[in-house]
Image (cartoon, rainbow, N blue to C red; front, top):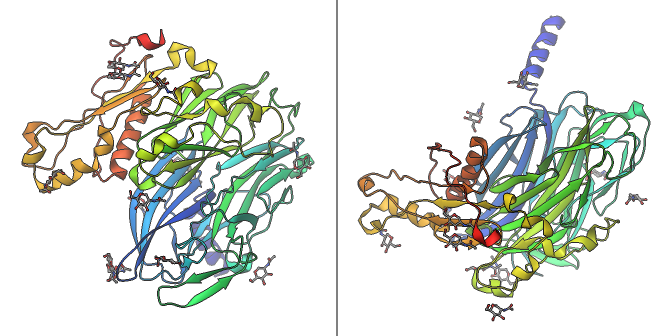
Length: 534
Ligand SMILES: *[C@@H]1O[C@H](CO)[C@@H](O)[C@H](O)[C@H]1NC(C)=O
Ligand SMILES: *[C@@H]1O[C@H](CO)[C@@H](O)[C@H](O)[C@H]1NC(C)=O
Ligand SMILES: *[C@@H]1O[C@H](CO)[C@@H](O)[C@H](O)[C@H]1NC(C)=O
Ligand SMILES: *[C@@H]1O[C@H](CO)[C@@H](O)[C@H](O)[C@H]1NC(C)=O
Ligand SMILES: *[C@@H]1O[C@H](CO)[C@@H](O)[C@H](O)[C@H]1NC(C)=O
Ligand SMILES: *[C@@H]1O[C@H](CO)[C@@H](O)[C@H](O)[C@H]1NC(C)=O
Ligand SMILES: *[C@@H]1O[C@H](CO)[C@@H](O)[C@H](O)[C@H]1NC(C)=O
Ligand SMILES: *[C@@H]1O[C@H](CO)[C@@H](O)[C@H](O)[C@H]1NC(C)=O
Ligand SMILES: *[C@@H]1O[C@H](CO)[C@@H](O)[C@H](O)[C@H]1NC(C)=O
Ligand SMILES: *[C@@H]1O[C@H](CO)[C@@H](O)[C@H](O)[C@H]1NC(C)=O
Ligand SMILES: *[C@@H]1O[C@H](CO)[C@@H](O)[C@H](O)[C@H]1NC(C)=O
Ligand SMILES: *[C@@H]1O[C@H](CO)[C@@H](O)[C@H](O)[C@H]1NC(C)=O
């Protein structure tokens, strides 16, 4: 009898072995409707070794109805993690607080601090704040699924702790009795400051292995405020009371000792023009922001860039240790700020080494007309990263802009002058001259694709998008999109698909239904070096 139970339990265990590697969630408040219902836009990242379905469920309060906006699932190349990024909207009947949780999965095997079950909680607070006259936005942060440190090196990680409302953001370990993790045993090998810096000090090899880091990030008002619920009831919060909370969970992997802890030998180090940690970048809807990243390691070989967010972000490898990220915000992202974190990995004799973690925050300026006044340069707000980085680059990360020429003087890192790194992406989607003759469904979808009709031009990347619908589709809602990607160097089919996937994601987030993508041809025939760069 006892044996049977044991077998059943083992079976249950193996089918639930979804090999969790952590999660992050954050939210922005949406609209308030006439009937008192409110919406909230939530984003999460879930990291697994194998793709799996673990979903956020209601823990307390009325969590309302969920409508999915987009889910983006992909494998991280070398590390073979499955990452899921989800964007969804919840409509709740009033602005009363509620909690969502993730419960029931399993962390990866042999977590050194003994954590087996995965659990995470988000507290969504939407009551009207007296200080800002609107609902709260959660802190915004991002994290790589697994961060590696050699056991013999001092390494510090400063998590991005940005708050759109200007609140005071603090981090703490989860509390088991608040269901924030199951259980919340903290890793012995790191110390956490309330300002969200993690410090790892050299430790013995007996402490090597993966640790589950289960943090909670909270925003505190800078003064006493009141929260007003739809029904008129009020609650007072002091600067000691958290407004909302989000989970920040990931794996810290303590590896065997490195031959040297000096950055730039085995451990890759970021150099110019990589933006400093916590740099704030500005862009506007349909205008891409470009982040140039360069890392060096004299002894190990740089292998890849790991990025915390991939949805709608184009990641390019330009050369050894040289990377570029491009992100073009959609209308829904207007007025909001989004974090992007990254690190670089390097390999030597089958050992993998990580650089430190860098995060930037990209703010999407509301509307296009205001953009003339916006700064294109990065504003380094960081004081924690020592070394030379802050001096290196404010100018090199730019949001490109066709309407002002103020930005162009700031754009040119020496590295972009090499012509073979320039990409020219021409995307032709499809809109009718015949718009008027198409039926209602096509009309809504085509208008949703208008992102396509804006042209954003950069000093190095030329993205032109134009649209046409075959006249033959008048009586159906089938729309053909022909997307041409041209480049100054030959792209692999996977690279082409990756670009097109980004375009597709943009269109889908703007309302276009799902559609399939095929490569019609991929040839080197049309390659030319643009004269502007010769
Ligand atoms: C409240 O209004 C919104 C938007 O008009 C609607 O979607 C929702 O169903 C309404 N809720 C209730 C409970 O009537
Ligand atoms: C993950 O997927 C691979 C390939 O599908 C499979 O071989 C492996 O057993 C899976 N691992 C777990 C823990 O489910
Ligand atoms: C898992 O998710 C996929 C895609 O999101 C879906 O097709 C599948 O039915 C889900 N499986 C379960 C067991 O929920
Ligand atoms: C949620 O959906 C149910 C049924 O689909 C509906 O009755 C209810 O009004 C919805 N709630 C909100 C807050 O929209
Ligand atoms: C929130 O309160 C402010 C005044 O403090 C008011 O102007 C605003 O309309 C309120 N917002 C909502 C959604 O009730
Ligand atoms: C890392 O953090 C510890 C503790 O906060 C501090 O003493 C140390 O100087 C930091 N090291 C670096 C390289 O920043
Ligand atoms: C965890 O939460 C409980 C209930 O709020 C509280 O009593 C306890 O002090 C908390 N523990 C820690 C370590 O903060
Ligand atoms: C952004 O612009 C829209 C209208 O274009 C306006 O409704 C919204 O309040 C603005 N948001 C901010 C943060 O200014
Ligand atoms: C913008 O370009 C125009 C024409 O080239 C030039 O006259 C003007 O001085 C430029 N403005 C700035 C701020 O560089
Ligand atoms: C289609 O879109 C055009 C332009 O936005 C608009 O004038 C027209 O009324 C729309 N037609 C329908 C049927 O919605
Ligand atoms: C971008 O491409 C368009 C059309 O292909 C061309 O007219 C324009 O001059 C190009 N812009 C730059 C900056 O090269
Ligand atoms: C981009 O490609 C288009 C069409 O192939 C070409 O007309 C344009 O000059 C190119 N621009 C750049 C900057 O390469």
